[in-house]
Length: 338
Image (spheres, rainbow, N blue to C red):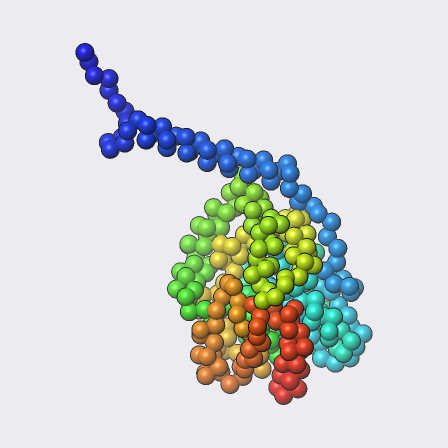
């Protein structure tokens, strides 16, 4: 009797091959289900209220398109500019405690960075230079005077870029839980920041059939609640998570965050390229953070006399939400003595 020829790969049985086919079919089905869920079930146009109880103004930027910001200009004094972080679902709401606290004592501005909030969220290339330009244009065109700038997390890198490129626009800098000081991310950022690796990752994240469904996973209510919880040492703010969910479910909401998730918005070796050269008074507020660490912060403090740091504990990246009196006390002392 002639033996039936097997077409299985060497070392692979027919049953093994069948299992591979089944796994592949399940994977394809799961991807298809995710795409269908994203397109049919997920609402990508959730009502979005203003992030702050203040007038909202827009201006047209040649580089960034329509840029939105909140302002309370009634008090006198040096202008204060608040810049929210960059993540999957950021907004000016992140800076609400500081806006509300200082609006009675000085002019306060809170920016929606390009790609977020009520600013232009179009599909385009998002890069640090775009955010630097938007902050600079707000100060130069809309405010018209040097400002104290307070920036959260990754936006500290953009604020530093403004101070380096346009020193006449920045009176002082405050970084809240800034990126760029984690020793373990130094090699990754040197490899990925703006390079081939991050470009390849971004290409994968933005495949036409997958990009929205992938972003919907990151911006799901469960995911937002989880990451919000990580950012609070105590009970997380429900209002914080609610607004993050709403702002991440708008037309075009995925475009800028996908550049963030691919690593393209980080500056490689930000410590030496952005922070070390600073010549304006700079305050760094920090403690714990679920996403970054501060091993290299002492390097900056030892080499740049313009920089100082205050630890506000226990917090996990949002001291102005959990320790507002301590945060504003540190800010007030810094501004009074710098």
